Length: 227
Image (cartoon, rainbow, N blue to C red):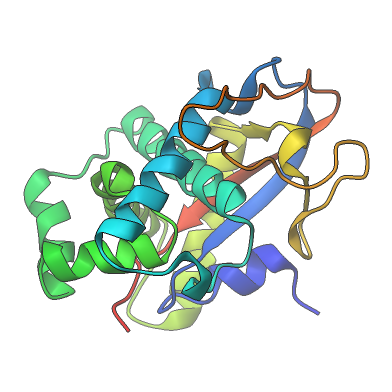
């Protein structure tokens, strides 16, 4: 049986995130650490609220989203993978231009249409361009790693990029958001309960507890596809 990581990695035509996992401590108040960049629980809560506001503005019911994980987990995973692949690209001199980012949206019917696709996949609009930029960078790195026109070479190349990303720009999650299991993705952690939800507007944001052996993940985003 293929692991969660491999199953998602080979779904090149579908939206998904391929991840690896390892251990490491996470600073109190952090939702995740991407290389040396810290994503705080407060920042994550802000993005979850932003996503909900974007969904409401675009008349997309949250209950109709078909996500593999909770909303906070999905937003966090998208945030970390976006930053991870952009950082890996910078370390190798690989970037994505604004034109390349716009071309992805144009291929999906333009930004108005593509924004709805991003939202349906748990990506707040203020994170959208960064996520697409990470996709372009990931694809360029995969081409450098031998990706051709056939699915087999693409899968192999993406796996190489994922492994390099995980070793070069490791991602560590706070256990507050669940353990990461390579076979299943995020799973409940009995030590801390279910993944934290962003509080309602005006409520104080809860901070993540000090991490013990928090799982880490690196991810390869695929371009969200219009239905």
